[in-house]
Length: 87
Image (cartoon, rainbow, N blue to C red; front, side, top):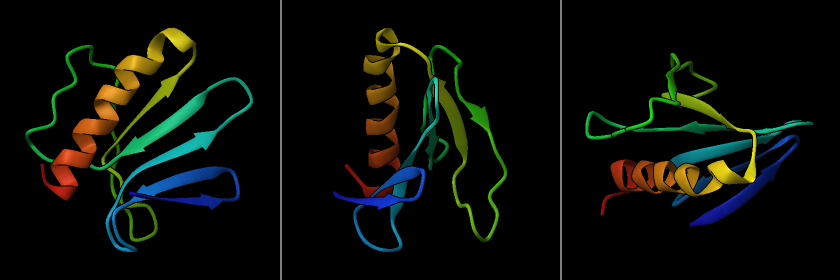
């Protein structure tokens, strides 16, 4: 996995065309965008569907407001990686 720093966010990818996660760094929280498929499971229901655009190709978004949410966020990011990049 490669980490690409952009202005205001960090993208994680396995190749230039295979992004699976972007983390936007906001003043009071992190906003995490994920790519996923039909096998993606969010038991807590914290992600929202978003529509892909030619410039922004992610399917779901959620926020992390506290350190207590980090473990579940990592679980969702790992799922996104497995959905998009294979297990």
